Image (cartoon, rainbow, N blue to C red; front, side):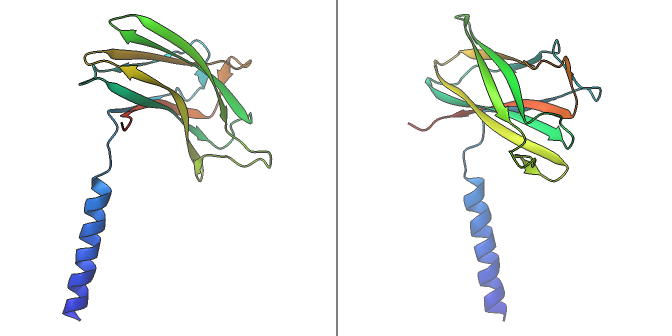
Length: 157
């Protein structure tokens, strides 16, 4: 019986150690949205610190919504500026929120989390980024969006 317990504990410790060895994001931050809704003029700003070395970097746009979001999708404008070169780009990201059967496509029960890929970039050591995010929907104020975030991770060679 004791031998089985030691084997079980060893397996759990091994699994936790392997799970902890995964690559951590370089940047992962969410901004909360006002409970009155996300106004079109409410631009969210994300300042990503300088890269430690040259490489290719991947980005994700994260969204959290509550049940009752009134549309099937969400159009978001994501602008980024590389510093100090001032190179900038604007992308329109179309986010599927509700599927054709009326169910949320995100993970959750009453709050739903979504992740949408953004174009990757090659960055040099010392370059940093500024992201600006705002919605591009007809409705001025979007209800039931609780937060928006950006995640940055280094892509493998």
